[in-house]
Picture 1: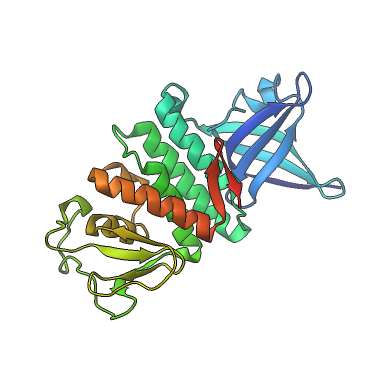
Picture 2 (picture 1 turned 45 degrees about the vertical axis):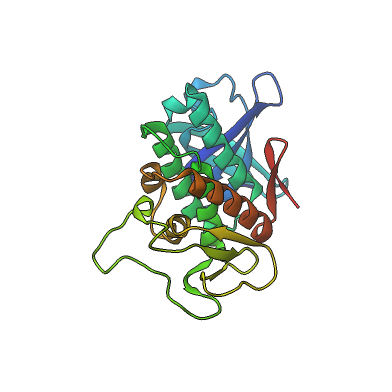
Length: 266
């Protein structure tokens, strides 16, 4: 006996285990990460239409055999490819970094749909945007970390309750327009996600000094996505702070660090 389902999936990786047979690892918005056998997948263009390649979004027909715990891919049809990512090594590297991060996570079925949507938007931006900031992959990781319940509290000081300066209602201020002279730096507590204003000494634990531009970018992550990240312009100091903050924050709260070209659990 088997159960059958049809749905969208983003292919992460494809390998062969016999001359014409493949295994396919894909991410489904309803089933999360799945590895399925594709018998004849390296040859059959009638059933798979030549679309079994990494970074393809495909419509899949899958059979699951509970007794063996095995998924078998019956058919696949290409929904969307991201052609630039096959020819631009830099963009392909950013895409691969984002996919590796998702693959290293333990994602529940309730979280899969939102992360799948974020992945598709991320690949679309990497495929089309003229420029993306060097911290694009860091912003992707921070977005996922924050949406999983680890968003820092950046609005008020953890000690005195002072409200951090924000634009007036109806006024849009880009992060790069925030001036250090008008808004002194602050300290982020990496363990708790709390912020300390310039007037309050932070308590113990690992801390990172950040400027207002960094705080503004992080504070807006919950309401913006990859299309907005692509338009960001920031100072070298802010880029450095974001690299440090995201790598340290993900390591502490998700237990993942980048080592030897992949994300590993601590």
